[in-house]
Amino acid sequence: MRLLLATFLLFALLAPPVAAREEWYDHYDNALAALNRGDHTAAIASIEAALARKKRSGYLRTYGNNYIRYVPHFQLGVAWHGAGDCQAAVASFAQSEARSETADAPELAVRLERLRDECETRLAPPVVSVEKPVAEPPPIDRALLERGLAAYLEGNFEGSIVSFSNLTQTTPGSARLRLLLGMSLHGAWVTGGETDDGLIERARVELAGAADLDRALVPDPALCPPRVAALYRSLR
Image (cartoon, rainbow, N blue to C red; front, side, top):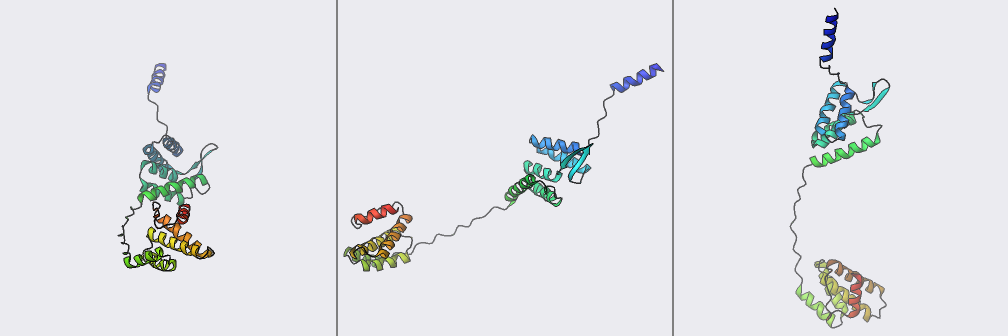
């Protein structure tokens, strides 16, 4: 009898230990640990194993008086996001929201929204930009330009203002025309006794517009008086 008992004890000691049955929370803990070390594949497998045993989310009891926040669909979305499968991540986040897993956890809700937005951006189709042909500027009316320059050189600033105003309307992107108009307006302001505030303000606007259109534009000293050139430089 003693020999039989000793034999039984010997076999019991030598036999391999029987693996303990893992509960849902064991798989969930394994998943969180895998996420922390960046092993998303292992995390996915562990969360799916936990879900196979416990489908209900929430603040659940594990054993004794121990409770944990169980948000498997949220964590599964995090794992899929980390693994690069955005379609699966978005689907998991949708399941998480449907179950209100992050309703009372603002930090998780913010993270869910951020990761979901990242995935939706990745999944969005690329924007195809269609380049529109650049419209060619209309040709400058050479005759009107010559009349404006002739009037300016003769000191007929009213005439040059009319010519250059018409030219800037048809060719608004020309810095040189804006400069010539500003010079004409300044000339009219000077010859009028420098009392017309409206003229000098219009001159400033045109000179500033010319500078905005072409920062490298330098007034021709043969045409531009020093006072106008100084004003133009101050507006650049």
